[in-house]
Length: 488
Image 1 (cartoon, rainbow, N blue to C red):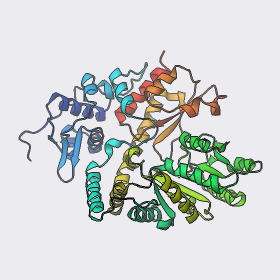
Image 2: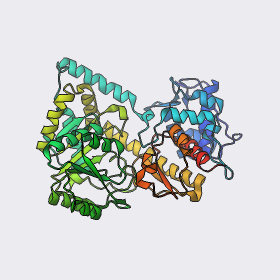
Image 3: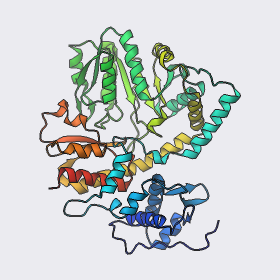
Image 4: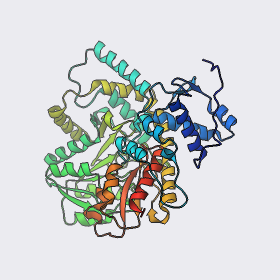
């Protein structure tokens, strides 16, 4: 519908330091004041950029961020509209709209309003999770409707295949072949309720299959995985890490003294340090697995998000990978609550997993699996992933910029080639009072303050997830860290 009046936006009197923040906060303020009612159609990005005399990419970035937060809604071939259902954060923005997104001052300790800090702490686990505000809900809704009709008409609402629906396994097999060089039949794929279930099943199966109850994990490792191994009565041994990933020379030394059942690794973007394992070490690891007869549990939790170069092929796609159990997930593409993952391995491993699943998850989730299969077959997941990759790369770059601008020489961060988090080294000692801010901001720090780096009293690390944060939220979060760590 044609707007009866032309919408004008004025930025000259705003005090924010960047055009992005001026425009974003002005639109939010106009929505909250009622000047831009729900359902209002905004100018196209090209038109608004010409009217304001700014770069079109700035307008596009603002529209994308405000859509992610729920203020705006983009409709294909129609335009950008004020959302009919505004986000719960509007009360915080109304209280302090400009402070919520203000960039750090050039001198002095940055400020953070209480309302902004609360908004971030209440809804974001800052560990490297996707931004659930960017989920294509309309596509999901349509796919679920189709799946529900299908299972009703075909009368498959009863117990499903414990290995996962054939439709989803076929879609996964095609994706793995085309995108990750993994040649696997549908019989070699098992659908699970997220990667954690895959890790648990691998631990259970190998405990029965292998004689030696020892598992090697990386120096810093994914805590739920380590807890899974401990709960299955494994002895856990840690292998060193460096800038090239898992230290295979140290692993070879460990193997001289221990017979192990398996090694658990996150080679694509090591968790939590974000380092990618080099190709020569991947090949050496596969060689060691063959020589010493142990399995490799490869947790490929965020393969989709690699920014600066082509991702290194997974271990299971390389020669002599018969001992690899590859675990992947779609949770990082959409949301952790989706609970759809998969395991790729040789037939005897998959068959053993199927028997374990029959004991704990006989029903499966046919509707979700059919919906995801439809989205994969139609190319919607690939399109969504491409869009998210662009957004998350921009957010990574912004997070790096903000840490350097606010902390300056007090932090060191190696730019990760991909993933959804930064591994931030602070060049000063950890203090006990830091814990309250880290807890409030949901920043996981057990890797950094535990025994693994207890002797490094002159510095410490945190894993900072950037994917789920807008630029405003990242600025406020990093300011809060600066206040807690550095302000007197």
